[in-house]
Image 1 (cartoon, rainbow, N blue to C red):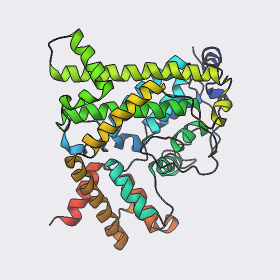
Image 2 (image 1 turned 180 degrees about the horizontal axis):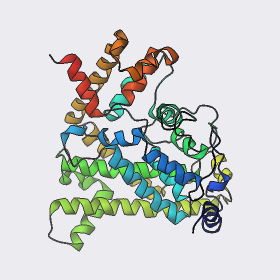
Image 3 (image 1 turned 180 degrees about the vertical axis):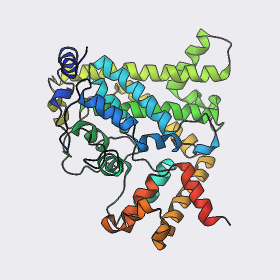
Length: 380
């Protein structure tokens, strides 16, 4: 029989000294009795999976709006891919896989419908009403908005997972660090792993979806070193095959190259800075989990290509502009007549104020639900 205490002993034996051990957690806001067979981070992971916000990710946009096809990434499939990549990196570096998986599963819980378009609109509307960004909203989801327990609001996650949500950083994120989290220095190595795994996942899988959606042609990618090297190697290995399989295998090669480079470079930096415990890593002003300069430069070229040819493609821009209109018009309609909100949202009006109550309600919508609401209001 494997008990929680034995799991904690295994962590002491197997994990690196700079890994975050579950027995050393800074704890939960509301004190709870420990589980006999699950570690603190295992419980967090399970709580996230069973939350409503996690289930809604199935119908929230990654890049392409949910109704445009059955095979494109959603926030849920993206989240699962991030967790898989992050676990691989964490295992190789002997970091805490349970903590990495919990942060991975929670990192997008605060996302609005219609991806970053929805977030941009809510940021504009809420700038004089407490602000909005998906990290802060994700923390709000797990601390307040989820209703699962008699004793407290939210999911009562550990400090480490909550810090991983609020400190999640990528090129798209607007990070605000509230109390009691430390805004100085860096974050747990496990959080840094999730941040990089997120970038690896969305760069490569957006590329794959862009090709599948016929917004990008493989011939255009000859100028992108990461793609060209991987594609040429795959063509050398298998001369004739289905083009869709070639694309998948090329993306797989690019991901594998980045993951291996990241592991080797991070290990080098951990030795260089003589990191002996989690706090040392958190106090450094720079991040330790990163790519070599060579691979990082190649990644920048690919990111630039995606920005120009996918994210700024006229079809994607049209879709995002339409999504901004949906969110803006819905918010204005509820603001002008809050009586149109459902009872669960109306009960928050006095306590939270109109803007925050409406913001919480809209941010929680799926793409599909937001579209249905828009049709009800604006289509005869």
